[in-house]
Length: 123
Image 1: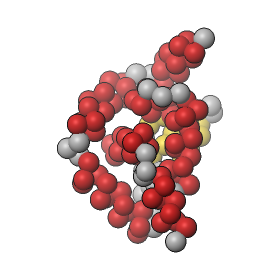
Image 2: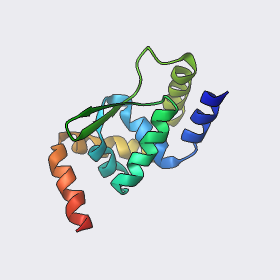
Image 3: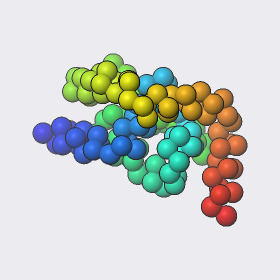
């Protein structure tokens, strides 16, 4: 029951849903997700932490970079079923289509450049 509650809580926010859906085409660095959502890095980290707790994303760290991806076939059935359902039922949502278009440019940008951009904005 705890995993079900964690999943429901994780899905109860538009920013978390957008981050999750953005990962459907592969791994993203935290800074790329920050750029997509246009939220503070600490806010995005908190959102991703909740998704990770629910088992909906996996994280790996390389130096100072945090990379997130959807879980693979090792994920529990409930996680796979939720992700399949979510991807099917949101693919035509306007925000999802818009995010996919923006992600093409974001994926082509060096993560260090993205990090410098949001650091400069905060200064």
